[in-house]
Length: 206
Image 1 (cartoon, rainbow, N blue to C red):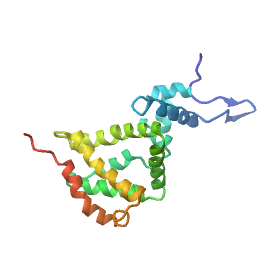
Image 2: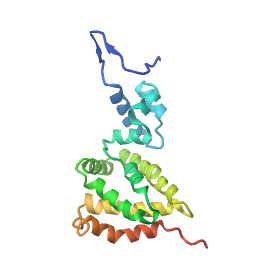
Image 3: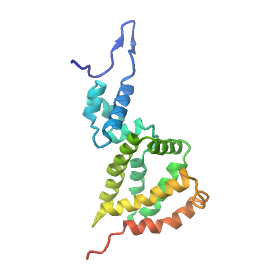
Image 4: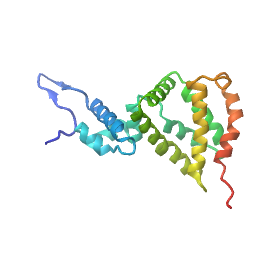
């Protein structure tokens, strides 16, 4: 079977109008199908490109990376790896405070917050989405944070910190459980930064 590569075919009656879904839409449809059937780990850009019948370079052109493609499929205006990347910049001693501030800002933002909540709800309702989201967070958030902090048991410590952040997300933004939901951002950071700092601190070698 011959696969068409590059741009979609043009309408003969109007050379400026593409026939059928745009290249970007075809990639998104193919990526969503792959993510739901193979998970984030099992989805490759080459496989998505083959399914969408485009050159793999076009995925990088439209979405920059596999992370960007996932975020676009899930309709995220601000993805967890972007939130993490912003928090990682700066003095390591203040990383717990920056993590809490960045997560709070993302979830309270009128653009990114609703999309993040919608993704959580969808993941809880659809096992295939949950699998893709879990693998995405393990590879793009926990692994990245572990790489940043380094040291013994870095992945376990990063996972513990992310567990605390996930608790904040569910109690404050999903369940809207008080007192977490009613606390100011400053109160939240003051109360929970020590727990995240304890998780990130390198354990003593025995």
